Length: 462
Image (cartoon, rainbow, N blue to C red; front, side, top):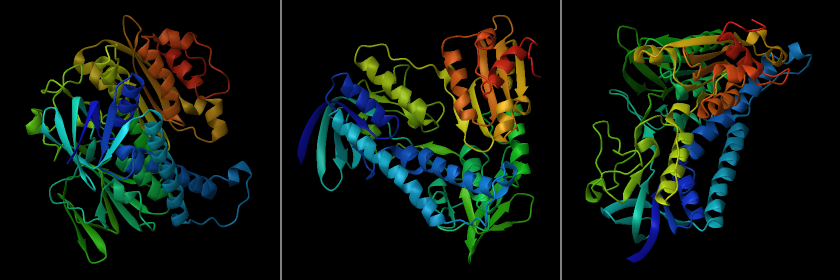
C-alpha cells in the first residue's frame, strides 16, 4: 500500500472542508483533502444549496412570465416548460462550480485523495478508492457534513419517496407532491414544483413552519405561501409512507391517508460520521451523534479537529466555511474568529425569509429586555416597482444599550438585505447606527433604515 504524509489532512471537500484546505495551504501547510464523491463541493454544491437555487430561479421566472408579465405590459403567448432543459441548466451550473473547486485545489497545491477515509489510529487514515493509500498527518480535520434524516415508517425507495437529492431531479412535474417537513428544504423545493404546476401539500409535525425563525416572520411567510396555493398543514404526525402501484400513500395520525405521485421527506439532516473509524482515533460523539469539540474545534483526540454539520450548531454552508477558516488559522498560530451570534440564515422562497441573531421568543426566554421596530414592504417604493410587497423587516435591539440583537426579514430579496444587518451585528452596531446611515433611494434597504427608526417610534413612512 502506498504511503503519504502531510501537515494537515481534511476529510471532506464540502464548503467547510475545501475552504479549510485552501486557507491552510495559503498559510504554508502541506495540505491534503480526501473526498469520496467524484465531484468536489459537498452536498451544498452538488445536491443542495446551488442546484436548488438554480431551480428556484428557473421556476420563479416561469411563474412570473405566466402570471405577472401582463401587469408590466408584456404580451406573451402560451408559456410552456421544458423540465429537461431546466435540469440541464442546473447541472451545468453545478459542474462549473465543482470544476472551479478542483482548479482552486491545483492552484493552491492541495493534494486530493479520491475515496473513503477511515482512521486506523489517531495519526493515520486509509483512503480506499480505485486503490488504497495510507496517509499520515500531524493533524486531521473532519468535515464530512450530513445526510438526509428520515422518520420511522417512511422508507426511501429512490424514486417515488425520497429526499431533497431526488427532488432536485424529477424528470417530470408531479401531479401531486407531498412534502414532509416545513423547514427550509421542504418549503424551497415545494415552491419549485408548485410553481411548475404540481399540487403541493406540506405536512409539518410542529404547530408552525420554519421553527428556527422568528414566529411573526414565519407566520407572515406562511400566509404568502398559502395565498400562492401551497397547502400547508401543521400539527401533522406522519406515521408511514409507502408506494402502492404508481402512487404514494402517506398516513397521518388522526387523518385519512393522503395519496400523491411523489413524496419529499425533508425532516432535517443528521451528522455523517459512519465508517470513519472514529473509535480507533479516540474521537467521541455526543448522545445526538455529533462530534464533541471544544472552542478551538479540537475533538477528544489531541490532533483531530472537526467543523460543520458533524458538530453542534446550525447546519449551514457558510457556518462550516467560517469554522474551517477559524480552525486552520488557529492551528497556524493566528486568531481565528467566528461569531455565532451573527450567522445569517436564509430561505429562498418567494417571499424570501432571512434572519440573523436572536428572535423574540429566545430573548424572552433568556430574560433579555428588548425593544423592536418593524416596517412593511408595502410602504417601500422599490418593492412596489418590483411588484413584490408582501413582508416586513423587524429589528430587535437591547432595551438599555440599543445594540442590535436580531434582524428578521420576510420579503423581496431578503437574502441580500440580511448582509447589512449581519455586518452591523458583527461590529456591535445599535439600531440608531442603522437609522443614521444614509440608504439610497429607491432601494429595498430603506426598509431596514425605517425599521431601525421604528425601534424608537421614529419611522417616517410607516
